Structure formats: C-alpha cells, structure tokens
Length: 321
Image (cartoon, rainbow, N blue to C red; front, side, top):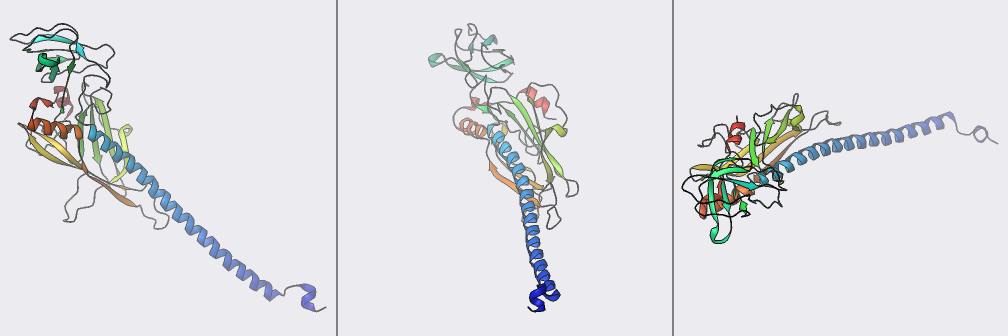
C-alpha cells in the first residue's frame, strides 16, 4: 500500500478541491443575490404600479359619473305628493319621498312633471329637500311622476382660466366635480388635489368628498391621501410643463362645459431600488377621460333641448373656494 492510498488525498489536492468548491459556491451565492435584488426591484415597482392603477381607476370612474343627476335612489319612484294647479305665479308643491333617499331640490333646477299630454318641464323658483315652487302651465294630480332629466352641465367645474362665471373653478392641480358620483341617489361634491413634491420629499394626491348640501369645506389632511410619492410631471416634448389635470372646454349656451380631461401623474417607488440605490419614477397618463353624462347633455342641449343642461346649485358654488 502506497502512502497516498494509506492517508487519502494529499494536502495539495485538498486545497485545490476546496478552492474549486469555494469558487462554485461564490458563483451560486452571487447568482442568488442578484436574483433576490431583481425580485426586490420587481416587487417595488409592482407595488407602485398597483397604487397608481387604483388611483387612476377611481379617477376615471368618478370623472365618468360626474354631472349625473337623480332625485332619489336608482329604483326610486318619485311622484307629486298632492295635486298641483296651474297659476300665473309660483305654486308650491311637495314630492313623495316614501322609500327614497333624501331628495335634493334647488332653485333653477328643471323638473319634468307628469306624462303624455300633461307632461311639462318647470324651472324651480325655490327648492329645498323635497319641496319647492314653480310656475305650472298645466294641472297635475297627486301621484304624477316627477324626474330631473339631463345632467349638471358643470358636473366637472370648468377651469378658472376659461372665460366662465366660475372664478373658483378647477385648476391644473385641483379637479372639482359633483353629482350622483356613487350612483346611489346622493349628490356629492369631490375635489382631487394634486400636490407634487421632489424625490427627496415627494407629495400626495388627495381626495376630499362631502355632500353638496354641506356648509363649509373640510381642509385637506392626511386622512384624504389617495396616492403618495407624487412627483412633478416631466416636461413634454416641447419642454412645456405638464399639469396633473388638463381640460377640454366647450361653450354651452351662455356658459361652458368640460367634455374631456387629461390626467397625468408621476410617482416614485416607496423604497430605493436594491440594484441602483435610486428611487424609480413612473408617469401614468390618461389622455382622454370623458365625463359621459356631461358629453351627453352637451350634445342634447346643443341640438334639441336646452333644459337638459341643469345649472349649478348655489350650495356647490359655495364649496368651490
């Protein structure tokens, strides 16, 4: 028996084997580390995309609902509570609210009363909750159906920059809208406030909702944050600043309405990328978001019936500043 056979591998062979083992182990560990860093980057970006997608989907949905008008819940059957007679001056009336959400009547609202040859559209001289006054040309019996057709023409409040009568309207950083936004018969006023920051101190997108009848608007606070880590949008191809909200405004009678909105939001990841040690920014743009109720009433009012464009309630005007 030789010395090598008696004592196994020589010291040199053992050292070579260990060196090979360490080299292979280092390669494997390096690959695993790279895989973990890549997975972390993907998870970081996925979380950011999920947050932005949730915010933009809500924006898209509520812009589409803006201007929607209803006297009660979707299944409500609103009728006159008592007989109404025709008269030369304003006549008081009350609507039947049994089983309906609280009704919202306001001065200037156009109501369609009755059906068939007795149907007419009246404009309210006064209105509050379920009662109001209007000039009726025809008599109507108790139980006659009543509806508020059309939509709020200013459901997306036109921007202050447009030549409108709404100096406190929407801006490039504040989107103001109202109507039956949730489709439940309740009229609400909603403000989206885009307050971008820097990479070191990113800003926020806030959502502030309240009933249209509320007196006084609550100040924006951290409970209203819809999206965090918001940055200033990069300039466009012509090096012009890109606002969070841009509006397409069209004339409607003596006023204006918004028929299209472009929403652009830039955000960064919550954590730094494990590979670059930098925050990862991303810009999300919704270039053509149409408020369908306003577009429909714009087309209808422009072509056939101007009473379909419902005016802005005074309670909403008071919430704009």
